[in-house]
Amino acid sequence: MDTLKTLFEHPTFIKIGSLLVWIIVIVAIIGFFRKLLKKRITDLSIRYKAQKGIEIIGYTLIFFLILLSFTVKNLEDYTIIIGLFTAGITFTLQELILSIAGSFYIFFVRIYKPGDRIEINGIKGDVIDIDSIYTTLMEIGEWVSSDNYSGRIVKISNAFVFKGPIKNYSMDFPFVWDELNILITYESDLEVAKKIVQEQAELLLADYTEKSTAKWKEMVERYYIEDSKLAPSIAINLTDNWVAVNLRYITDYKKRRATKHELLELIQREIKATQGIVNFASTTLQLLKMPEVDVQLKK
Image 1: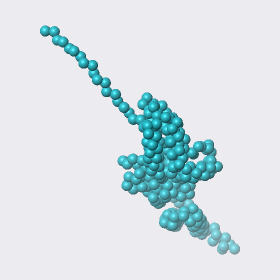
Image 2 (image 1 turned 45 degrees about the vertical axis):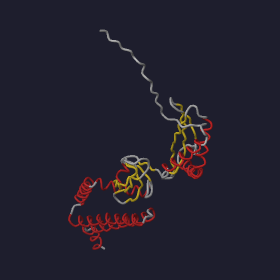
Image 3 (image 1 turned 90 degrees about the vertical axis):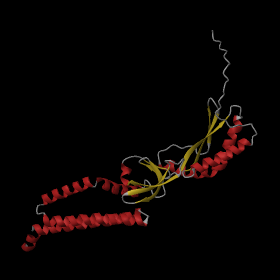
Image 4 (image 1 turned 90 degrees about the horizontal axis):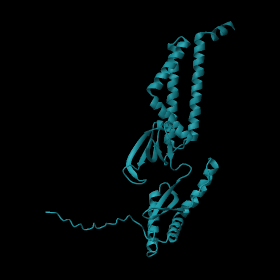
């Protein structure tokens, strides 16, 4: 008994026992995160990389624990070295660590996923890949009009999820509101114009209105948000030159440009068919002839 008691109280035995406990705890944490990643991440490639990252971090920590256990005799020195080492790594690799933390935040919170259209750090595009460091976007906008691809592939650090707002065009509610102004003359029949715009909008956008209504009900139930009108609506604006018939409607976030084009074609065709009852307006300039001036010079 005395021999066993002496063995258990020996500093080397205590050090080895503590080391084994820490190794078991780290291995258990690695296994826990591997299972959690397997449940939360559906993409096989991303899941594999994330699990490997967890293993590398865990086994690196075990290596340093073993190394320091046999090189540092004083537990207080051991704690100080670990603290200094951690602080140095954190300061040196703070952007990398923040990017890795951002990748976990993206996967677990699901703020966006591949296929979503987002705007982050002032860059707008479709998410085509997410890895442990970067989010890759197919850029839209810039030198091209509307929501068209520019052709550039943009890589953004995952750290930016902590540094500013993220605008997601497709999460939960894959529709956006858009507006179209139809400019008509004051001599046009306003009621006929309103009827044409309303009917053509309802005809073209009926499918979007139906699908978005179901999605909007889910939004109202999930978030603290007021109910909103999803059917096409019209507002009139009077200017010095024309009457603006403003159409507000909802459409798929990826088909905003195509929807506006179709609406304009349908409305233009119907307005032309009125044979002058409704006319499009345009900016006009009236040129006035200067009066003739008879200048007589005295000799």
